Length: 162
Image (cartoon, rainbow, N blue to C red):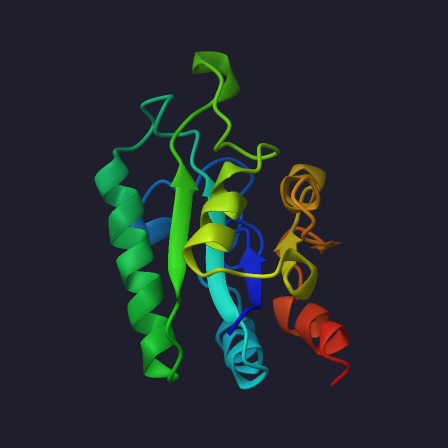
């Protein structure tokens, strides 16, 4: 597989409450996400998450909470036969220093491209903010911006012409 769908997390995969998803109790997978994951895999694309987690830098929640959320997401995906290929997160916030990892920086996307030897032109990044899309476009990965808490499945159906 030389292609992947890069996905933002909050507002694309799980309900974005408007600030931070700080714990597993607050992590609510959006209704059609697991079906969207299946569609992505049926089309032979990898699934790679790229998510800013600035709440860690702000000390709103510990990094362990992020790992717990991601382990839960992986487990839920496996229940429908889908393996998430990689999850990258940036534990930084602009108020507490600069980072190339934090979107709109492209480092998380670059890491995924390099690790899996992906062709950027055969990939896509789906996010709910302009900075998400920008992070992929900086390295040749086209982007799709959906509404916050919008339908990933509808975006993927359109992308795959289904």
